[in-house]
Length: 352
Image (tube, rainbow, N blue to C red; front, top):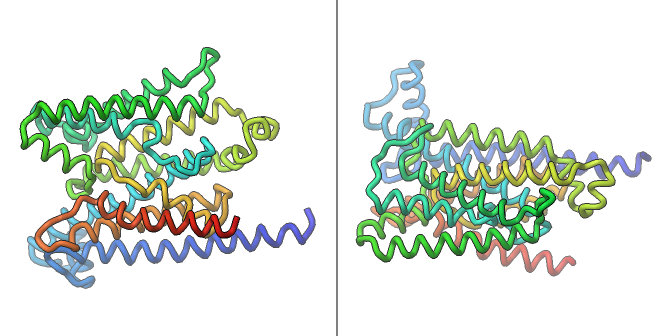
């Protein structure tokens, strides 16, 4: 390789590193702001003092302030960051795998399956007993997402065991529509209170996440990020088509199965905890590619950071825009995501 071909790669790597450093700094500041801002506005000093007091390295603050900071807002803000990162990562990988720029984490019908599972739990009056930090509704949503995913894979897999991307997308649409119809039927024949609870869940929120649930979210997102980075070069090879990827030594079918399953399980776990949050997995990958390019080793960390930033600020807006009332987080992401996506499309069209 000649020096002239090394320079762009070095410049791109430096640009990626620079953006990562900037985004990490912004994320730290944003998380601190997210803990401080709320119905009871607190200073950053009070936040730090409360955390230090809980850790036993300072006098701390009063019990109510410490409870607000440590037990309520911190897990909520960290969950928003982790969920935003996870959804953005899954969206980026599914866009690369399918070659579809409109792909998002809910491509395979899991949002419909998760909604059906949650609605079954809500309309049958399930108790709050769950596992691994998941309550009954979250556990039901997770199982519903897995059930829809399994059905999609059964439909999309050929007799030879190959996972066909075109059939996969169509199967996801069909299963998602079926689950949506069943969900609507349950809501229609349920009582008004159940319908209200269903609506609140489907619009998404991180308000109910506590430390027990946060641990599971962090583990899922960290494992997903690790696997995706390990398959970075494989994802790059898919940009040239299946035959080119195979000629480069990629085991196409095995890679597809691994990446689809990991993205799907991650999405199912995140939807189970926070409901359906749209536009993060669709818009963020496109914005990140404009910053650092398409190579996944550089792209994925930036995607995760931008997704985390977006959802942290969306959550802040959701609980502060209307005093005394909290908006569903998916409303905020849609209000931000639609104009951003239109702008990205127009900019890409102008430069193509």
